[in-house]
Image 1 (cartoon, chains in turn green, purple):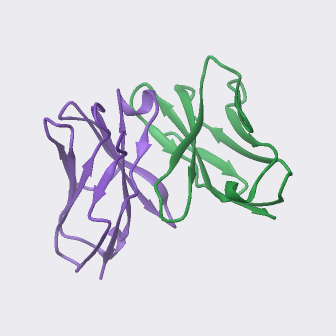
Image 2 (cartoon, chains in turn red, cyan):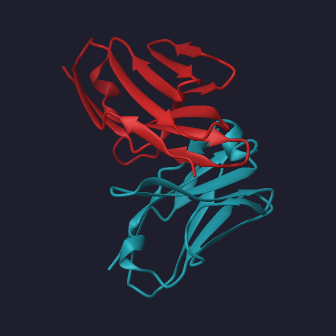
Image 3 (cartoon, chains in turn yellow, purple):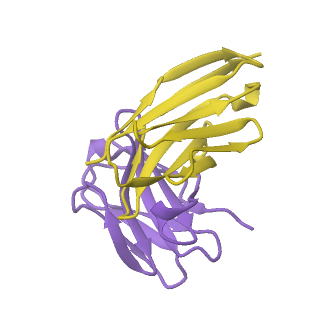
Amino acid sequence: GENVEQHPSTLSVQEGDSAVIKCTYSDSASNYFPWYKQELGKGPQLIIDIRSNVGEKKDQRIAVTLNKTAKHFSLHITETQPEDSAVYFCAANTNAGKSTFGDGTTLTVKP
Amino acid sequence: KAGVTQTPRYLIKTRGQQVTLSCSPISGHRSVSWYQQTPGQGLQFLFEYFSETQRNKGNFPGRFSGRQFSNSRSEMNVSTLELGDSALYLCASSLGRATLGEQYFGPGTRLTVT
């Protein structure tokens, strides 16, 4: 079945620095890749997503890149702020209805 | 627009009991998916309901079941609870099929089995 590896598991940055989280998937049928942010006591919130026909997508300080050949995709957060501190999850979805999540990255932004 | 709501938010049950969790999706959304979140196993897909039909099922035992009503509200049932069923149960709704587009998660139900 699909396997999604997410790295690093924890990431600590200074406010204003950039943060990068990487995911690798195994199922070549995966074609939709969402990223979620989960704050303490809340459910995951979709922050950005990318489809397999696109290589990069940007939304203000957040960007996602996809390399289909290498089967990996990455989340980039620039100019980090303390409120970006949370757990971030990547996921790889297929049209057949399979949705596999990475194990999560705990991001801490130090003021 | 109201978000996804889940009831109850917290639940304590004893081994061997059964439990029913409820999820109300965003108005107009037809798909409801359920996930189990634990520190050890992460986020794992349980099942998806779309238009009252189960469309996909994850790798969980038959003790886990669900249903969806005509108003898209969904319930999840776990019978013969085990200690390992202690987890945060999340539901997510989407306009169309879950894996094809944006999913919106509820706050979850924290189930503790003693």
